[in-house]
Length: 187
Image (tube, rainbow, N blue to C red; front, side):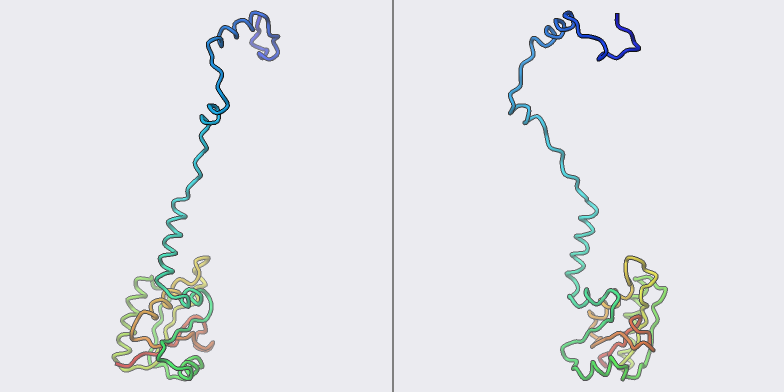
């Protein structure tokens, strides 16, 4: 007799057991190999929806900026000039040769606040006839892995505004890569 303390595999198979099994499977039909393969469906590959959305957003944003904005916007010195600005003028701007006539410090601002303040500052400075201004954006040391968020945004915004002829990161004494000299078009 079968004991609940023993497993089925410990019990020997009797002739009666074999006969019961044969009767249970007597009407069963053997599957062909093709039928067995067709019934196994491969698992769908995992899809990272959010990663793809992030990649699409980064691609769309990168197409808005030129390659200089992408390459120089993360940690290094910023530099931009319109075609009408000559080498001598850029050399003078880079060396801090122009008198800084106004300054704006964007530290602690959100991107929305910084954009509005910067836009107003650039327009006002150009209307006042200022040739060179300094904008302090910071080096982004508090931004962690995201990199210098405000610095990258300032780099992108200044390139788009008609009042801006050129800009470069400042000399060390004026903020280094945490600020820019901006050459404005006088109105």
